Length: 247
Image (cartoon, rainbow, N blue to C red; front, side, top):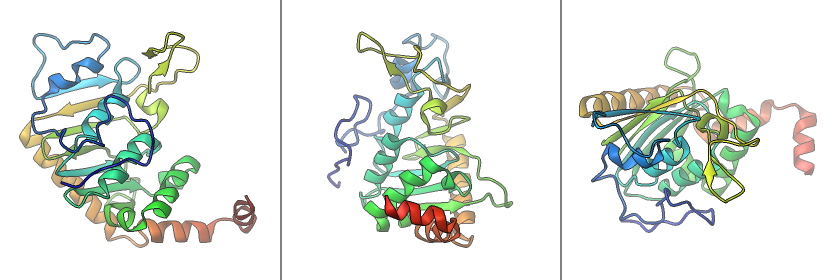
């Protein structure tokens, strides 16, 4: 098992990417009840599926909890990709030869200012890993790649309307007492859901679909990050390119 170290300094309690011995092998949905607004699941809650709500539940930490515990595989398609901390976890996994990872991103979204900033930095920091594990493109039917979910270690799936962004996840903010809360003038949250699933049949079918979507993108022109951003920069207005180069 490869040693891991994130490129960012502090990591939260839910983010255990620096400890590869903490995995999903004993994961149950009850692990996530701490991130609900109630702090507990109902006595008749399902053991196979639980729906979380952005703006009510701590979806940002739910995402970190699951993804940072990956030790075998991660298959993912994410439409909005604008969370530096989650990206840092994925780029750490990209350095781990014991983890199989395929990440599919949408072509139009990847051109956004924030997304492009995150992704071009990934390309600079670890071009081999980034080009190996990521692909950028369209759906198999030449439209946007709008899936927002993943399967982790073949044991846990997450799917819903949640994009990876501060407002998309409803990332909690620190109040005057240093407590993370879903409130206050700086808090932003879209109406989104995140459904976590442990049902084996659903996981198998969803993982197969994520691989299919990734393969479809790989078959498209300029789908590797290096090719995509080379073409993206080439098509940028000359004035914008010169201004960027001067900064």
